[in-house]
Amino acid sequence: MIDIKDIKKNFGGVDALRGVSTKVSDGSIFGLIGSNGSGKSTLLRIMCGVFKPDSGSVLYDGEPVYENYEKKQSIVYLSDEQYFLPHSTLSDMRAFYRSTYDTFDDGLYMKMTDMFGLDRERKINTFSKGMQKQSSLLLGLSVRPKYLLCDETFDGIDPVMRQLVRRMIAESVAEGGLTAIISTHNLRELEDMTDHICLLHRGEIMIDRELDDMKLTIHKVQAVFELDPTEALSRLDVVSHETHGRLHTIVCRGGEDEITETLSAASPIYCEVIPLTLEEIFISEMEGIGYDAKKIIE
Image (cartoon, rainbow, N blue to C red; front, side, top):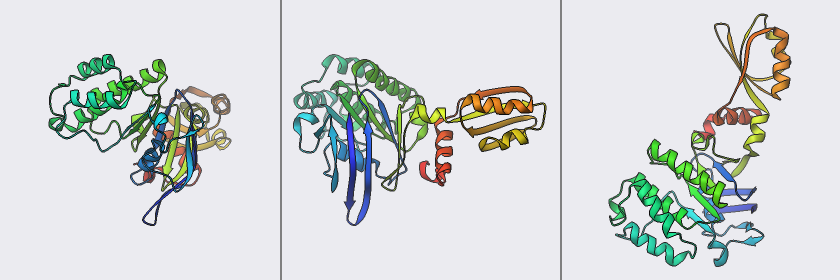
């Protein structure tokens, strides 16, 4: 369990974080969402003990992380700004990681370099940006850490490799007890992957909820009605309502049974509840508290 308590951080008079508090459960994938400048990278660097907060604390199973060598042995932080030893190859970085982490798994390292098709003896500075991202990730996963902190992990990786990376992280969580914290400004990267969502905006948390809880409180319905649905819709908390010919697409808050039962008053010829995308859920959540979500998450 990671317990983040009232973290504040100021750089040159600018408040990067303004009292951030949240919890990350073990064995989960925690999505950290926010636009550029929202404080995501600062929070991750505090979580891995690189930065010291001005106030507040980050506790891993009750222990502080800052200047705690033993605790840092269980944490891998993958920065958005890739760093490798000058003129190093993957083999050189493997040796470096082995000297730093006692848990480095050579077998997993070999398997993943083959999977990604990366030359272990080629200098990493000749790799493309996407290949460097892959190199950083496979080295981090080869440590078999308890906690993996990723900052814009998928940026620059092609769609095929992106799916592979997502699968590898999910499998490590399911099989190896990994806890992953993934920071991104792109909601689509976390679709069907995240257990918990935390939205940062200007150094403050706007939303901090389990994804399943969010999905249970808002639904999208497509329907064709025999009667005018206006009166039935007036009894629902409608977020959006579009019509294309006779087809109505309705997004509303509430339980699925409650929504379909209310709409039954308009004698639907066809009525289906369809899954909302993560972006649609966020837009509705942010509008519900008075914010234009598109200006925050894009």
